[in-house]
Image (tube, rainbow, N blue to C red; front, side):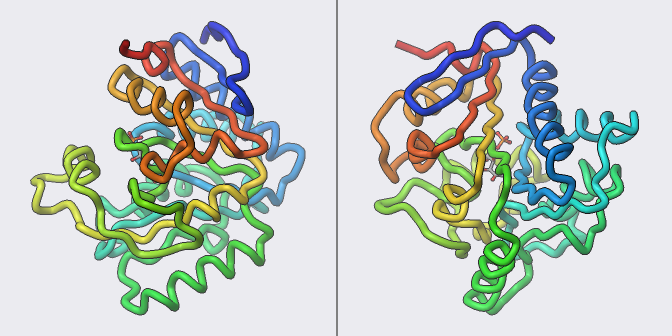
Length: 253
Ligand code: F6R
């Protein structure tokens, strides 16, 4: 992997790599260092295509005997509603497949919002209470949606607070239909941590790759802080690292 450069844009630490593998390895190294320092770390985790390389790299470190997940606890950002954990498009299924089933984490210590919880208030309150009781995430992994969403916090008129149920935007349905057999199968709702939950993480690391993300990266981190582009609030986070490839930073004019 080749690190091309690093620097700061305001508060944001930016690291640029020549490949997806390189940026994934670097983000995994960052998380691994935190895990070595704090074996009972609280990991805030994301799904989607972007963090798959991180989970592969963390798995390789585990297999090489470099990492121990036995005391690790995790909280995922979001889950589709209504989807059961057994559904192969659910984020619980994704996490089991891409990380939890590959390392020695105790699944009882892993939380993903329930995709079948019908009592919205109860599910959200319990999720936030568990996160707060754990002391919040030591590090939150993020990707970014092409409309600037983080978790499933869609563009809005205000920044959301805690875990809540959302209607997915048309842009998100269009972006995520690639994972489903047909567009009608994409759930129209989801549970997601709120912006406040994400901002309270001790550290945030976002992985972003590919030219398709360049316009939103420019908007989020080189434009105003606005709930119209939820990720923009990360400009104000005290410890935010953006790990990207060149294409994601090749901004259009
Ligand atoms: C997933 C999540 C989403 C994704 C975003 C980018 O848990 O919270 O915000 O990070 O939709 O998805 P990819 O990485 O597939 O482009």
